[in-house]
Length: 188
Image (cartoon, rainbow, N blue to C red):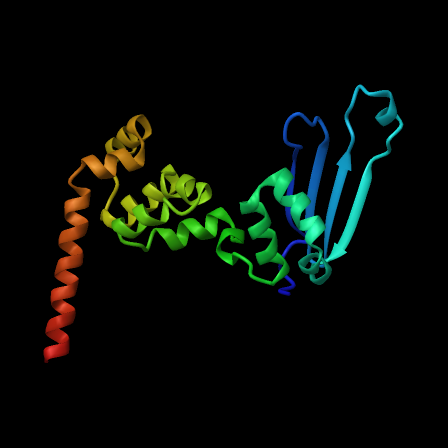
């Protein structure tokens, strides 16, 4: 497993399905699965129940159908699938990069690709709609950014300014010109 991964790969907490009031925690570390539960009940027979904990290695979890069923019942099948992927070493490294680095990468994408990326996860939706990204895109598109442009962007947001301004047209024109120059160089 990559050493730059954090010790805790995933953690989720929640209440069991109704009518249960029990509380659960699922913690995935680099080496093990930890499933904890707390019985919450008004019944006298459960009042003295102590919290429980099960620890399994990733390999043992993949073979433990009872624990898998518990995870699916409490947290759902999507979480169970995600845990399977983590146990099998299938990590989403892109999701683990810092927002700052992701913004630098995203600003090199075409607008259509940014729109598609924003639909892949809530994290990427937030990043693709962030003012920081659109400020970088505007700065890479414009030769100069005037104080008036900054004031306008502060009021309406960089994304809105980009999408409603001629900047987009300028960017497309510049890309088209670059493509034509590249094709001319290839033919020469």
